[in-house]
Image 1 (cartoon, rainbow, N blue to C red):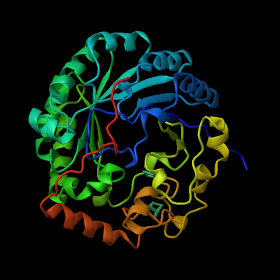
Image 2: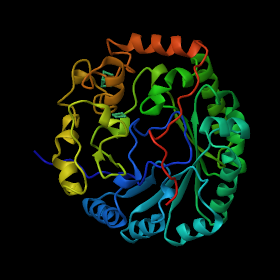
Image 3: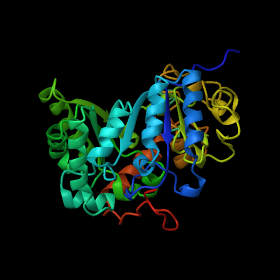
Image 4: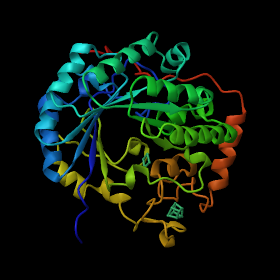
Length: 368
Ligand code: SF4
Ligand code: FES
């Protein structure tokens, strides 16, 4: 049997530290601590190994990756290896000089998260007073440094009514691309699902807003639109299929096929400090477990879409059915699809409970 194709991209979660506490964070509930983080030399070696196996892009993420003072060094190293470098940031730890240093280090692109178009609501959702204003400043520095900017706007029932204004905000910030990403329900998002999930009517209205804006803003703003699986007919190919295109490296160096893979019982994830990245990608049991189509149950096994969506999301199958090896219940062909829809309808119609904000179990210093 021939080995898998090389991964397209690495999501390098440099740290789980973050000044924000967004209740939909895709990080695990059990956050890794500063003392567990890989050091600069480890990350430099990981970047070299990634380039060697054919990775094309590295997304520096977190937590908040700018909390790491070696970010410029890592960006420069990645750029020197020929990797396309993207910074996924909340923006508030940046200043103008640092944005300039990152650009000079070879950073290719910045993706800035926005919680809302209303400053007070934005700060409430992110759990960070004054965050909105600092993000607006950060966007200005990014554009002034000549870096392309994508605004990432996670959507949920607390901001969905202001989608028009969020689109206007992205245009005003000089973004070239806007990701209107309905919250996906794993990590903290799953814990806060009842507080976040929109009604079907809200989702339909948001889709109309995006469709109209795509027409209106042709040549100005490019849209990425991610709909919530709970109202979908077919699932998305989560991560482009398990172990097919992406790998996630946690702050402590664990290599995962997706953000939420650690929720799946029985899988063991190897660390970049113990085994080479190529070996892990090609041979680790966790990456092999749901790679390709051989693991699939019916109806996926004989479905014509099995190499399009790869059976959907393993972590969602686990969260809803209790078994990661089931067809994703977001698929209407799944025997458990009705449960998912009933759950979405019931939760979205009720008064939302208060947020359980993302937090470390004990206070950690953010910057270092
Ligand atoms: Fe995708 Fe499986 Fe549904 Fe077919 S049955 S559309 S492969 S999730
Ligand atoms: Fe793990 Fe989708 S989040 S497979």
